[in-house]
Image 1 (cartoon, rainbow, N blue to C red):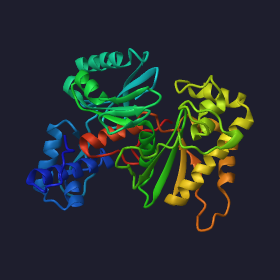
Image 2: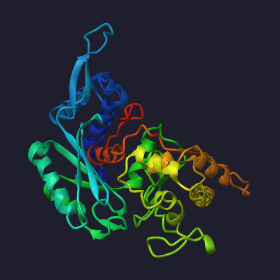
Image 3: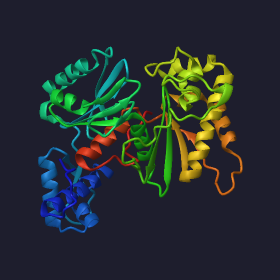
Image 4: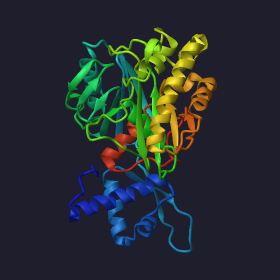
Length: 384
């Protein structure tokens, strides 16, 4: 709606840019922002600010609220996010099932369901589930984001080992069922965006590493992804890092891959699946062979040390289901990276914030793609 290419500074593009600025101000201070506040913050005239607000009201993106506190004259009307109309659909796609959630524009999850499938029925069941949502909500569905394991350019699944897909035009297929735009987001990128969005933008890189059934990484800068030209940035899981007798066979067919040592499947055993809940994974951690956990921590630490020497990130964040690996694992990763490599600096390593719901990352990406705005760190949805 507001995310068209504004490379050429036409009157329409300037208008869209101002609409995004005004909408972001409401997102930053819902129920407190006013027309006069938007005029002051943007430097636009009061008439232009009022015109922008009128358009956002007509589009059902914002609503008028209660009168603002009196400043001596006529009390201004506050502006808030319209939480009743538009919906953002988020699909957390995994090999055997998917979690489908609907979000209001303020980041509140208003509905959710789980659908299970086989590799053969996966697309058909997803299309059916999204068609049902389309039948109920129609044009109220603003955009959909599908988070998945694998590389994507936003429209096509370029390659996914876990889904056993290559070159699948998933956005087009699901978009036809839903009747609106569908954005594909790599699962690690989505987590990294959520973690970056929970803090004020930093001036340096942040390295995010996902540990689950697979291992991947993403780099953010100023709250935005730093992708590569071939959409392959962060694909570190099948890089060979363990050699000799210690190298294990990886599911990709090679030996010594990072994933073969530090994925949760390699450390916790065949019982692990990405579909397990937190309590089930904690139980597997408690029963795991400590030698496997330690081997995984050392392999991961070697990769972190090398990437940190290259990027000089402000911090390294470990996310995904691996956040339940515990302090012993984290302490070993820290100690294995805590040595003097000439010219490098020691980089803080921590687990991701467990209060951020899994669907927030793709929802944030969808919101930015559709409207060019994002939830501020103070407004980022979190579990209590």
